[in-house]
Image 1 (tube, rainbow, N blue to C red):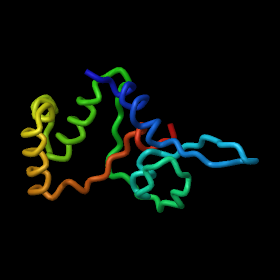
Image 2 (cartoon, rainbow, N blue to C red):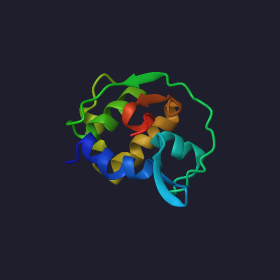
Image 3 (tube, rainbow, N blue to C red):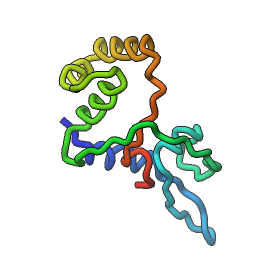
Image 4 (spheres, helix red, strand yellow):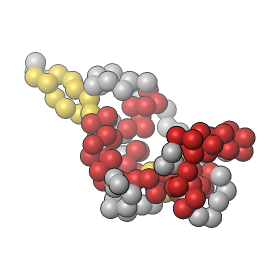
Amino acid sequence: KHTTNDVVRAAIIPGSVCVTAKNGRPVLLGHAYVDRLRSGKTQASCRCGSVEPVYAQRMVTHDWRNLFLHLVAAVVADALGKDEYASTAQKLRSEDGVRKLRKRLQRSDRQSIRYWICAFCVNQ
């Protein structure tokens, strides 16, 4: 139901905002969401520290109006070596399907492929 734009506005941008002080007043800054996750600092503090760059092996393009589910399904399907994502999208709709996909990724040893998706990697 939710587009990539919806998810970025509702989750990624709020999750990448940090608060610092300048002249005694709060100032909102941001980081790339992936850097917040990698630093382990998911709270509003700006004390993420410097995060060493990690280079992606795949670059993903998308349309902000498309379903976020389809973006995730395309990435997971690629990691599983599939040429299409429709069946993966269907599996992502249930907890049991997600569990099965995780097991397949673990068995394939392809879960460490790094993907560059602008919504996660650019300071939004």
